Length: 299
Ligand code: XIL
Image (cartoon, rainbow, N blue to C red; front, side, top):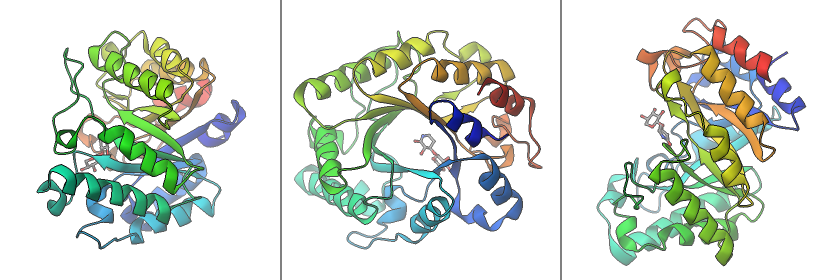
């Protein structure tokens, strides 16, 4: 069997990967993609700098190419990401205040409208909280437009594409006892209490090794789920790809009914943004690694 087919048999879950659109020309890459995965996320091509390089000028070509590749093969698409402090185009980096708030909301509206009906989940806001013990919002030009920038982005996304599931996505929110995890949890709880439209939380889950795989990860997944949102493992990669850590992640997701699926952040180690750590399920030649077999067996 394959990762996607096995995940689908587990309550209709998905098993996906980040895709670099230029690699769709590499037949070894595309062969694995089309065989194994039933969900895709654009690794960079649907970020703000890619979609709106100049203010008011949208470049949907690469994003459209991925959506077309995926949807013609029955793969679901995660949109990544509408509002983020990073990978902003230069014109946006230099903005502040009301001008920036309006430009951000316009970007959300234009992009979500362009892809309306084609995106299963949007990462509406990415990485808005600080690491460490503060539990505070991350300082950024967007944060300085006012604390309500996140909910404003979610409301604009809902209005533009009412059928997309709207997610908050972040890293280092895997360990339940971390201040950052607790801070995101309280934000989601507050949004649910006040009727701010949010449907899901994405845990990026860029793990640095077996010892850093949090033993309370399942508690984190089930605690977010208990707020009435789905949870997604959105960017999984693990330094040196230990089979036991990969197996545990799969088992933890399967144990939580609202954990809808797992996306790994690339196909072959050579495709990874952390390629020197060999963190993925296929080696540079496209061969299945031990972690692949552990994942497939657990699914
Ligand atoms: C990374 C990509 O993999 C790289 O190619 C790019 O240079 C930087 O961004 N969190 C995220 C992803 O939400 O968008 C990031 O992707 C990895 C960390």
